[in-house]
Length: 115
Image (tube, rainbow, N blue to C red; front, side):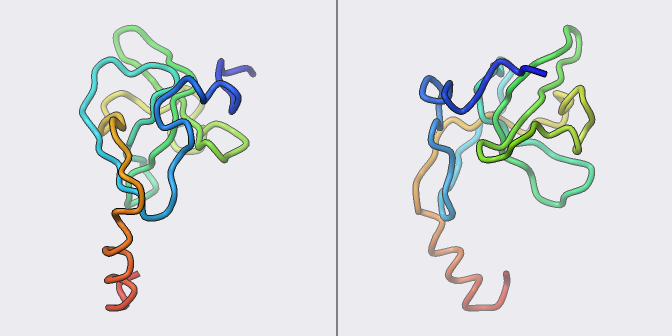
C-alpha cells in the first residue's frame, strides 16, 4: 500500500532529518495535524510516548494517524492496528528540535545508574 510519503519527500517537511540521541523536542497540542508532521503519541504497550511521522490520515469525525519512524521500513500498525493512532492518543505535534541539549540529562542518569 502506498502511504503518500517516503524518505525523498522529507525535505519539504519539518524535522526532515529526524532526531539524534540527546535532541530535545518541543511539542504543542495541535488540531491541524497533516501528512509529514511529526507527532508524539501514547501506545497501549509502551510506557514512554512514541515520536513518529504521519504518513496517512483517515476519518472525518474522529481522525486516525498512521505513523512511521523515519528509519523504519514499515508504518506503525502494531500499536493501534491498520487505522493508525486515534486522535485522542496524540499528545502533540513536534514544533521545534533542540539538538544535543539533552546530553547532560543522559550523562547524569548514566552516572547515577538510572538508565
